[in-house]
Length: 194
Image (cartoon, rainbow, N blue to C red; front, side):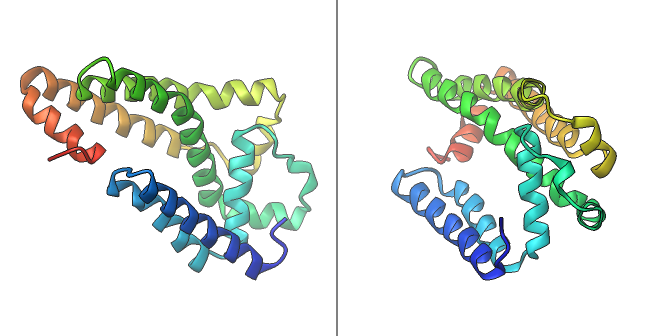
């Protein structure tokens, strides 16, 4: 996979363009266009080995990355690119958690105020972000210890978790103390007002 550098770059840039088109056609908040722009940027500037490390991190989070297929030279090379590997893990954990949290947020938005729906979805996102990948890896019988031995423990998951936790605690506090401000913040985040 990804042997041809030009094809790899074209595939990543095409994914970014397609994702951006989907976001625009779905009338999603313009703030979300940061994601396809980041994908497009990565396709243009990222080294193919860095792209491989991100891809392996995503596969590791799904429990389908087999470290034994890498040669010793590749292991050393990708171990030096551990931040990209961790980025892939965090991105895939976020996608997995969003698969459940976003539909719940949409469901709650039809039945409750937007601020409460957003907070409910975010509160569901946090445990899923941490525990769903672990459940998948355990179900797939992935050799997590070998991956941790090669790449180290992913500290980025803790940083993302605590950032989201503190943000949600602040939003809940704003909701209790000043509901109007909390509604404005959620409106700006979701692109539904300001």
